Length: 282
Image (cartoon, rainbow, N blue to C red; front, side, top):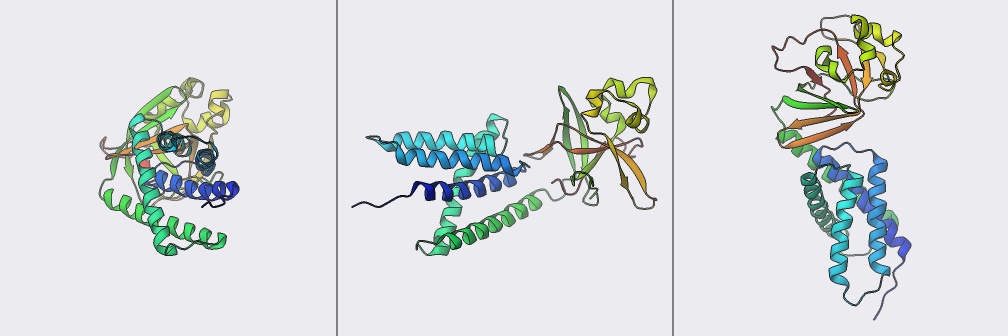
């Protein structure tokens, strides 16, 4: 008894499923990986699935199991841009759990019957939306009331750690990039700013138009308009850092190339926080 297996169908179906699993894993861990990284991780997973089918071996199970574990780790590393070893292990296990849950979900919906391509695409989209809503609901529930968190800002080799306040009312958006904008007190950000931008005792607003240092230009400095309660419109200088890590309880949220507005005024928070996180980030 034998059955025909079309390798292109195996690749396409695994590509779609692996992409969905990587996006769900990133959502669960609060990692905002760009979609093409998830697609690259899905391609690696699909190629591995095809490799298991076409490579003949006398005892395929140990080799297939080892290849599955290695592939899942590489997929998590690539598709979710996981950095720490502990999070890599957790993301790998999460991938398997989500694959099991999604597989069972698809099996229940299809009642064990084979599906046409269009039906498969619909069921895949439905399962992604279902689990995405569940994950978002769980994250909001677990983070309720946790407004102050530790934030690590990084630019090149320099890092600075500040306390951030998660403000659901801050929905400031950079019109140039459509990214959510968080606000940091100027004094807390000095370590990350190039020395050329701070020479002569200039404030950031003055340095924006006068400093032509390449390291300053790499931050893509520009102004955005803002409006706050009780005040008229104003402008804030905005830069783009390399990375931002938000430590909220046991969760670590990575934001790559975050848009950061610099405030010359203090937040009058009595040292409780030096940064106002955007409501769209968490």
